[in-house]
Length: 114
Image (cartoon, rainbow, N blue to C red):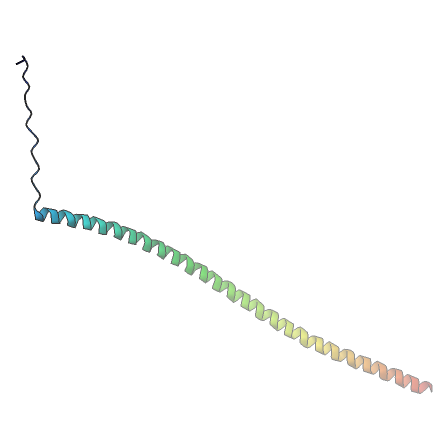
């Protein structure tokens, strides 16, 4: 043998085999971790839906105000148009009366000249 002898290192202790209970607890921990991850995803999705619904509600509120304003303007335009049509009819009637009186005046003048 040589002057140096090799010392053998003790082997690392072998892990004890897991009991059925330990295996079940580890599986339960894994399942809980998966569930927590799913819940986080669900929370984030729900938050995004809430924010989108809030924004849509705000936009609809603005559209409602715009629609009311447009309806008011339309009502005003209809009223003014109706009044103008009535005035136009009155002006037309007045013009017909004036034309009729002018014709009568011409006839009277012609009769007087004869």
